[in-house]
Image (cartoon, rainbow, N blue to C red):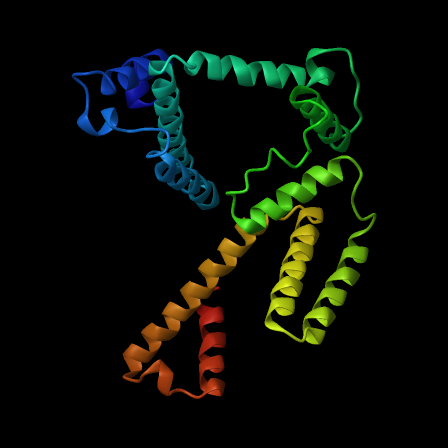
Length: 260
């Protein structure tokens, strides 16, 4: 049990604390916040949760989930003050959705595998939203482009619109590379490169790879290796820009061996 939990803090306490922060005699910063002004903080907290997950530190993840929960609580409190909804409505809403979308757990329906669960989930979501709305309309367009790409492809695949084999998508990847080579204008190159990234996102989805996570990991490895190269150059009293490409590549291989 954590020290704060031992002190008696629980969900009810959090509700009271957030309400107090927003009260007339509360915190000046919290009182002036709106749904719009909190947007950057919500996005930042989501990324900090993702980083904590990647780092694999349970206490860090606990802290970051708390920071993310605060953002949810603030939005709910703002809405409550406007007479729109409160945090209990938020909880009731997601609880109801979970029960409705898991008839194989809370009802009599039977499923044999996770893929069938995904298909049922999308069908039930469509029932909730109405038949006139696209399966893809619920994917936020503000998502990072690569993550958005995987999300829309995942939803389309849930209703059967998907390649049968990963090898078929790999063949499509080679086709997209060839089309970039044939592109005769900058606009064509932009479009074909977009198709190439979209195809890569599809391959990653089929291989159960989160593209954002994979690219962040590649970015981190690149930065660690390049910083090693810079440090070595400083120690040797030379400018990295003065090295030939062959020398830089040799130093890169050294960095790979040293820092991974």
